[in-house]
Amino acid sequence: MTRPVVVITGASDGIGAALARIFAANGHELALVARRGDRLEALADEIAANGAVRPLPIELDLTTEDAAETLSELLGEAGLTPRFLVNNAGFGLLGRAIELDAAEQLAIVDLNMRALTALTLRFLPAIVAAKGGVLNVASVAAFMPGPGFAVYYATKAYVRSFSEALSQELKPLGVKVACLCPGPVQTGFQSRAGLDFSGVMGAMKPAMLPAAEVARQGYAGLMAGKRVIVPGWINRVFVWTSAVTPRALLLPLLASAQRRR
Image 1: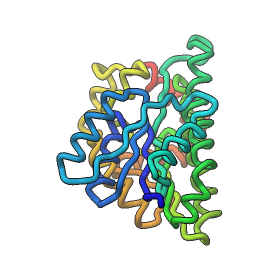
Image 2: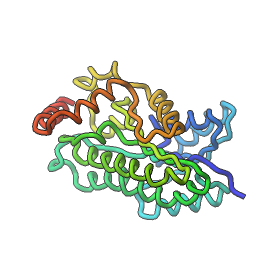
Image 3: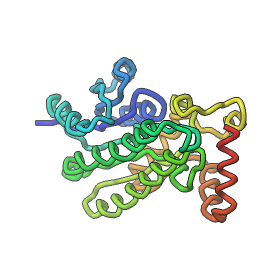
Image 4: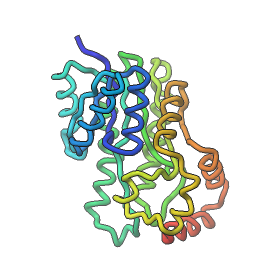
């Protein structure tokens, strides 16, 4: 016998940790995946202290080629099977593509796209059998090109496209697939990406939603069967505006904004 769980990647901080808390608060048992095992243990203890079943912390580098199979084996050994999969792990780098390290940019592709796809494909049979769901965390970056953040924006466009197509394919099978597209949220992502909050990003702070609110809307949207979730009306206006702005005008505007970061 196996127990159904929610598998959450990138769960050690930020939106991933917030999603873990809200899934646990709604009665789901969890398996938490990230590279920082100490943070996963602390989060598991916190969730258990609040009365939920203690999550299974799994320290794992998802960029390794056999990560999906390794994760599947670890879940099996613990008697767990995925009902929901939350692909939250990801990172980006600020700067011109020609100036950034090529290996680091390819690592963005490996984590944001390849690992997300590998995990989804590996666990889809179990998710379909359980009539569960998949929540892929992208960004408002998924709706536009990103000069100065080129590889990251491109990977998030892939995540959105992949999610929407899967949603249509799996809906007849009773499986929910949603893509969560938040705007800027002050988490560990910014420091790794090289973003500076003292300039233009600092001016955006009042419009930033807390990670907990992004997670709340992501969970609610997934359970309601929404295909794409953009938290915050400012972000929704930004997405709509970018869609109707000619690329010849949008690209230099975005490039200028990234330089000011």
